Length: 316
Ligand SMILES: NC(=O)c1ccc[n+]([C@@H]2O[C@H](COP(=O)([O-])OP(=O)(O)OC[C@H]3O[C@@H](n4cnc5c(N)ncnc54)[C@H](O)[C@@H]3O)[C@@H](O)[C@H]2O)c1
Image: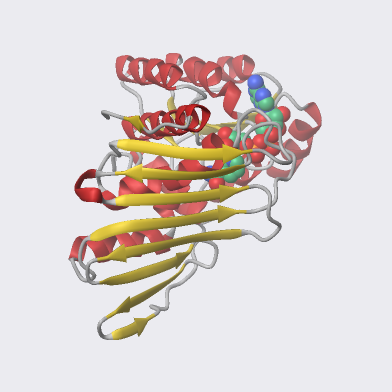
């Protein structure tokens, strides 16, 4: 047990990713209940964690007195489930992407505001220690101004994500990181996509144009076998290269090459700890509801751009 809080959290959806929420929230002493439409999973995790599991969201909300939930179900269900949890007055952490459409996302923002509860989304890379180091480096001015970001997020499709394509499922992480590193909203989006092995687009190249010609290039694919998660940040005073998996950051500047030695930390642990502190009123979410909504808006623009072969101009 790492820390104990009085916050009571229910996890909704305990599949491939939600099972990690169970583990981490249990470790943090906040796991109170969970639910999944898959009865076998409910039985398995009830036994493993000794907390009550339900097969329906409604029943869990009725029978448990929770402060907050994390929603880890497939993207197409996020809107319907989060409407219920927000309307029940629960602080709600929704896994990325917030919703399938920005229209649905806007509705969630309105409900959260009306209910006075937190709405945030699982943009986990903001909690990756390598990204925190990069953000601090940029804020300190030590490598100058960031100009160009080049992301590679690539691995073989495992056949599990069928409701959305790679842009809403995967490239959204890099859309969020680009907005976070530049601390700007993109003004224009151009994308090309295709599909080879999955029902939706499974490879994508996205260009995000920001003010002062700052640009992010995002390459994502579910076709190639090797798992790659990399970011190269070109700044006026040097280049920072990040491996999201090893959390290594290499800084090349006029002095030479530096690879700071940092302890590897689980981003999900940092992310859920932060959510708990927000529920306790000690912090405000690093990923605001507007951030989550804008990521969906940019992803939508990328999908429209790729469909029509034209740049899409945005006002966020
Ligand atoms: N932040 C990250 O790095 C990361 C990584 C993987 C997945 N995710 C996100 O997590 C979410 C889930 O992805 P996954 O890979 O775990 O999917 P999954 O299909 O493996 O698991 C989804 C689970 O939700 C359950 N479910 C479906 N509808 C439900 C409902 N109405 N009520 C209760 N349970 C329901 C399913 O039975 C299943 O167990 C997605 O939004 C995905 O984008 C985030």
